[in-house]
Length: 367
Ligand code: GDD
Ligand code: MG
Image (cartoon, rainbow, N blue to C red; front, side, top):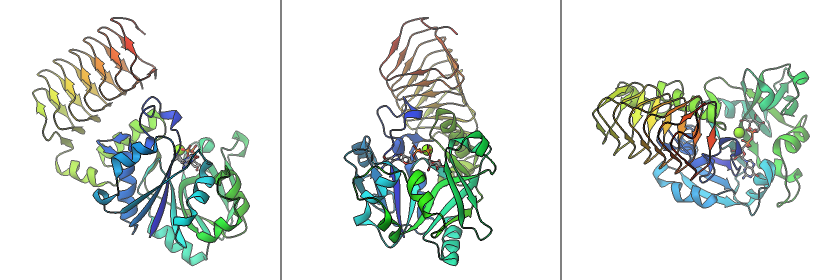
C-alpha cells in the first residue's frame, strides 16, 4: 500500500525549532519526527511512501534518504511554491496508485488504519477520513456525519457557534485516485480541507471514527506533550517499548555522574556532572553537557547544547548547540533556537521564544 505524506508546511507555530529545520525531521525523543509516522504506516502494510515537500525540502531528503533505514521505499515530490494541501495532492498525481493513504505530516498517532481501510471497502467510499474526538475542535477541521457514516459537513477551523460535535479530521485519509479528476489542474493552490472535501460531501466521502492516541505536534506545548507521551508509553511506539524494557531511563553511551529520574532518554556522548539531575520526562540529544548542580526536568535539550552549573530548566525546549551559563532559570514553555547563547543569571519564562543565534548577555532578562 502507498502513502502520501504532506510535509510542505512552514511549521510557523513551532518556530524557532523549525526556523532552520523542516518540521518532519525535528527530533522527537531522539528520532526525526516523521520516522514515528513511517513506523506506524509500515505497521498497516505501507511499503511505498511519497513525501510531499516544499519548505526546506533538502533537509528532509538529507535525513531520510531513500527510506531503506526505515524499511520503506521513499520518494520525494518538491513543489516549486507551496500549493496548499490539495494542490500538493494534485502535484503528486503521476506517482499515485489507484488507492492510497494521505497523511498530514505533523501528527503523532497510533490509530488503526487497517480498520479504517476495512470501513472504506465496506462502504465503497471514494474517500474515508479518520476522525478523532478532541476537547477544543476550533483549531481543526470539524466533521459531521450521517447515520450511514457518510460525511454531512466538513468545516475547517470552525467558529465557536459551529462547535456542536467533538469529532475532527485527524489528517489521515484513504483516497481513490479518481478523486483527483474533479480537482483544478496541477500547479493551482488548493486547500483539500476548504475546497476538495466540501465538494466531495454526498459524493462518496465517509468518516471513520477512530480511537487511540492522536496529537498534532505543531506547537511547542504539543511537541512537549508528544515527547512525554512517547516517554511514558501513552502512545504505542517501538522506542516506547525499548524504554519500558529499560525501566524508562536510557542513557546508552553517556557519562552519567549525576542522577537520572525516569522517564528519561539521554543521547550518546552526553555528560551529566555530579550533583546534576536530569528528568523526569526529559530528553537530551547527543553530546549534551549538563554541569554540576543543574536540574533539567520535563524538557527537551537538542544535540550539543551546554547547560551551565546550577541552572534549572523546566517545561522548555533547548535547541541544538545552545549554550546556557550558570545560575539561569528557564521555565514555562520557553523555546531557544539553535545556537542561542544565554549568559549567566538570566531568567526566562512564559513561553518566550528566542531565535537562532541570538546572544543574551549576563543577567539581561529577569522575569
Ligand atoms: N506539500 C505541502 N504543501 N504540504 C503542506 C502545505 C503545502 O502547501 N501546507 C500544509 N502542508 C502540510 C503541513 O506540513 C502539515 O503536515 C499538513 O499539511 C497540515 O497542515 P497544517 O498547517 O499543520 O494544518 P493544521 O494543523 O492547521 O490543520 C490540518 O490538520 C488538522 C489535524 O492536525 C487540517 O487538515 C485540519 O482539518 C485537521 O483537523
Ligand atoms: Mg498541523
